[in-house]
Length: 219
Image 1 (cartoon, rainbow, N blue to C red):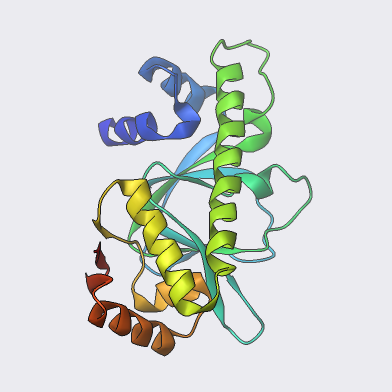
Image 2: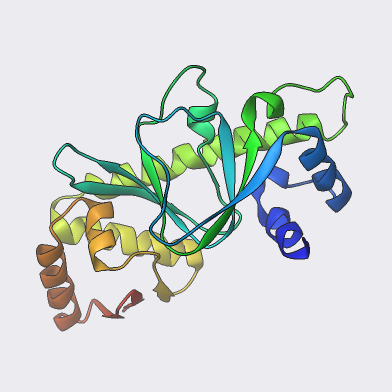
């Protein structure tokens, strides 16, 4: 329970709420926890979804898959991150993405219709929760805008350097790790894995960066 409390403190959805108010939220709004094994699909494209998930443990990849099985990773989620909130806000809609656990994971689900409706008890923290939910939606929109920026760069080198430069700036470090292996990074940037690996080799030879697995250093 203490570990979950620590994760919820870092979650944007609960910013500005006390530990007691966070606990009240879980009693006021229908919620439940669920565990997943590495590789397990949380939900598929076309599923109905009316909940927002908060990652308590592990990590997830949100991805799209075409008719032939080609995948594009849209984003990743770690402890404290929220996912599924957009689809939960659209009544009678189904998801157009799938979500997979990339490690053994645990998720806390909150019922979004209840979250967005001020309860009869007029809980003082509920309006703050709704404002925080809007902030989460805005952050997701900004994240998608950043991805579009990466994908609109010319060539694999442009896409790769755009993404790595952003990660360095977000973390405030020139040496950092990314949440993707080589195939996953290729899927995220929508490029061929072999071509991506070749470009990384050239960038390293030119002294622009160095890397080992998913740890990069920009020079």
